Length: 407
Image (spheres, rainbow, N blue to C red):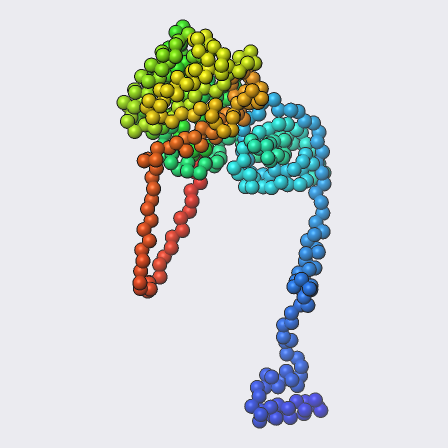
């Protein structure tokens, strides 16, 4: 009763003084909700609450290690990419190098195939590959089901300024090196034209033919020689063409350099007559290593060296103002005396799958660097200057970038 009487008296006094009863009740009964208080902070500025959360998250249990059951060396290195799963740092599969999205533009080559037991991780045996990137800078373990051949799926490695070739059709004319032969078998969709498809992000037709000649091959002639190949195509259907012949003319027939030059001229004229706007690139032959000897200065069956052949082809390309790739002057020195035994799969003439990628990259960059300046489409943006403030709000539409799909 005494407390109640005191409360009534306090309320009456508060009313006379103009105070709210809510505040008076809080003062008299001390039952209102307490005000929020800030958790004490540490010297670093973090609250003790956040510190405790950090401590609890660091106590994650380590993933048990998987066990390597068996492994074998992969004899044939073919290019792959990864669009799902993870890359692991070791065969223990308990530490990730990162998810697939972190390696979306990396080309992988398999070096080992292994069976790994993941019983300790709640799974059984499965097949894994030890892989390295084309540059050799990255490596790791990837599950068999997550590796996809570069000829399949979307693999966006388009180069800077590859949009010069947007929506253009490219045709590649050439011999077995254009076709993608490695000295033992033709690598399906692994030749440099396939890489041009990726690096230039456009449609590329591989018209290469194993054993083809630039000039008349006589008894050894093929339907893939330069003249029959040019005659069988209407170049109105193409925007760009590459020409890469000559190594078989050096090693297998006795045509003269004059014959070779005449044939090359005639075919370029025919291609240009089909399509005066056709962009042509020449690709000179790579070095041969017959009997493990550099052929650059060795006289072949036709009575000329490989360097003589390259110079003769280059003269014709110059006549037509056609840019040509001369591997002798290429800064990366793709195939040399010191690396030909592993850059060439047969150690003599034909590139390995990995070398075909390097060729594709070099050729693509050469094509971009030598794209006709007058054909480069430019968009001029004119800035409009206004003196009045806009009274109507502007609606901004965000453009969603489409993921390029290669065929």
